[in-house]
Length: 353
Image 1: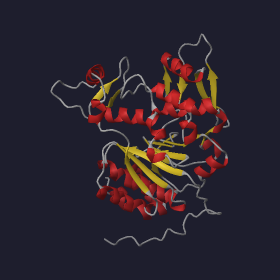
Image 2 (image 1 turned 120 degrees about the vertical axis):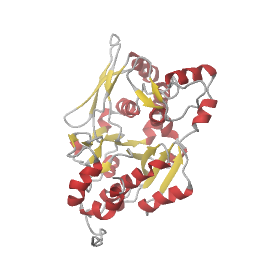
Image 3 (image 1 turned 45 degrees about the horizontal axis):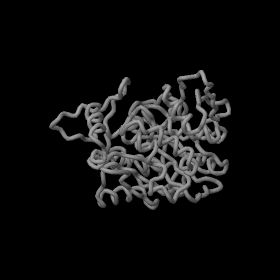
Image 4 (image 1 turned 135 degrees about the vertical axis):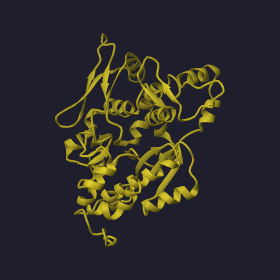
């Protein structure tokens, strides 16, 4: 079998004028452990082919379990010359549990169905009270981390803007329009790939917003211009139903989320008990942006940005993908139509079959 000829992509899909690299920008994601690095190689390689090879923004991976230096170098080789940081985002599970009192531990173990002689792990599945939601503990922690703990994490202290991309959100094409440029030049606080990504309907949410802001959202919608639009609760409105930005891809202005009033809300939001999935990180991204200035929260598509991210069988959260699996899409369609992606990443995607 003959190998495919090498393709020099350095002069392919160039922007005119060339993209400007802005200061203070980081592209971030999160995984549980180093066993997820194969999907990060794929995701970052495709992102590089679509966009980051033109600007080389820093890449940041939050991880729950530590990686070895060898594992970090393995991923760094794929994303070079962009700077890569892999950082443990918080305490170990053992340290979390050690900091809890007896009642908190009892409540956690009951929620997660941990037997008396069993050691709790990130893979125990936990149920929320009065809810259908069942998630493993690692997923519940990532939701809490992204809702509150992330904004003031040391790894982000030197950055002003964060583009978030879930580790399983895969590029399918060249990015013709620079989302970072649009975000910064228009002084936005939030820009997102899709809205809505579910909703939260809970009377306690009103109490949490009133405590932090002195007012409460009852609904969030989007205008024809692609701006988020609030409907404020009246005194008699007891149970807000807040639609929220889909969390797989968005850009945030970090100083907004770090501000005292929004930190007060976010801390209150996750304060009920540890590892809760009642309050989603999507809600934590949406509410501060609307409270700050809804006209500074933009939908990407409505403003001419078509990223083409394949995530959970959908493209940009809007259209059904032609194949449920990205690898199947890649094999049957992607590598035939996207030359740069094929030249840079084909081998990494094939090994995931």
